[in-house]
Amino acid sequence: MNHSEQQIRISNLDIPVKELAEISSASWERRLHLWIAKQCRINEQDVLSYEIRHRSLDARRKPDIKYIYQLDVKVRADSPVHEDANTVVSTPEPDHEHPLYHLPIRLPAPEHPVIVGTGPAGLMAAYLLALYGCKPLILDRGTNVDQRRADIEHFLHTRQLNPESNYLFGEGGAGTYSDGKLYTRIKDHRIKFLLDAYVAARAPRRILYDAHPHIGSDILPFMVKRLRRQIEAWGGMFRWNALVKDILIRNGKCQGVRLHTGELIESPLTLIACGHSARELIQQLVQRGIRHWLKDFQLGCRIEHPQQLIDQGQYGWIPPRQIVGAAEYQFTSRPSAASRAAKATTFCMCPGGEIIAATSDPGHLCTNGMSPFLRNGSYANAGLIVNQSAAQFSGADQAFEMLATLERQAFTLGCGTDQEFAYRCPAQSARAFVRGEAGLASQKTSYRLGITAVRLDQLLPSATVHALREALQYFEKLIAGFLRDGVLIGVETRVSSPVRFERNPETLSSSLPGLYLAGEGAGYAGGITSAALDGLRLAETILTGTPATRKTET
Picture 1 (cartoon, one colour):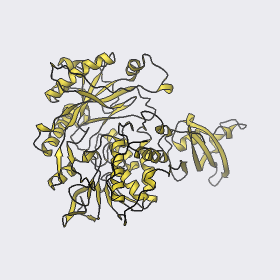
Picture 2 (cartoon, rainbow, N blue to C red; picture 1 turned 90 degrees about the vertical axis):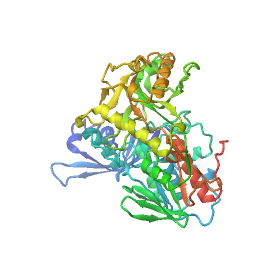
Picture 3 (tube, rainbow, N blue to C red; picture 1 turned 30 degrees about the vertical axis):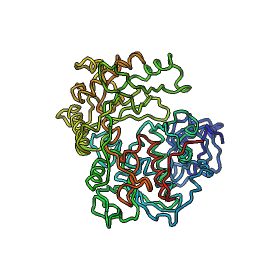
């Protein structure tokens, strides 16, 4: 099988004879693509070929007789096939020659460690620990990815937010609903192990060779589910709706966690990879005296354009999307010395994507972006963010409260007092933002819950507004129409954590023995790949007893 296709085994495909009768009797078995596509929940053109392995006629419920097929099917490699008991995807085994498959294990390896969070850091830490027989217990405050998908659809239809199952919380973490970018400047030999694991879990094989690999929000849910199944096959266990409220400290060591129900889960080793949106848990760790320091973080808003404008600006013309894909950008402003404005950068750019309500708290609103693998939407969006100095805050509580206040204000400005329009997003044209005036030329947007004309320049901190105004004028020089046709939407408040927890250089544990803190919530990552690598690095250290360093790829 070549790299442009994937193999599917369908063990039970029911096709009513009445439907087959509408097709020419001479060719109907050569035209099963439609029913295969329905079974797999993919586009018919994604079905490349198939071989019938078995066929039987079921006439038990006359006159509704049907054929039942077993088939081997080849579909497009990046097609997000829906798996169930009757539809199974064959995926390649990862390269077992990688050094992470041959670690010098410290004896005894930790048994039943507790891992909090199923985002990239927690999931890959669990993956490596499970590979070596540790049988981790993985806790997540949210639901599995199938229930999570249903909860998000319910939110989009009713505007009723589930605080524990949304675009931020649930299986796979916030990264499950994102553009799925895997590009990182980190040079680490673990990247190949990570990408091989992702491909074995249904990520497109092209992530192994693309310069700027990405997966997409339509494929990521399937990928994280298969990673979970592999961890379970190695003896790991997952518990959903298990919100961790506190850690259990005995004899000067972390001995497990306490759930919101009061249940204690004891373990000799606890690894928390909760993500930076788990603000209550991060603040609880701070109050528990886990050594940390405040660090700079970022905030801003999201900007949206027609994708064709970005294509024209980046390519000089609009080439066929199926050949080159939707154009990307990554910009940093160059403020003049006279202005003393801070730099502004674009972040999490989503070509052909949509803006989403990345919030977990009722009455709060912040934005993020996501894209399907094909990036075939009509709009492009990106975070437009400015650094916030840690020096202006007295502590973590004050930094988090500033972000929460912005989110509450954004929610109120978006819907006013009418809850029928809850989670509408405040928006302002980029040109009006720069001019310091009201203005929103159009209500058209990828944001599904609608937008409301608002003065975002009066909502964001003044220094941030100043930096964004200079940046927008500079970016207009890079892509004609960036300022003229851009729309600023919502507030971007969940870019990074204002807290970084200290690590013991010998063990990489926190200042509390037995407690490891990983990923974005710990202040050590900024995206899917860097978070996943951090989880692998901590797991490797736990297994070998030697602090794992970032090794440059050879």
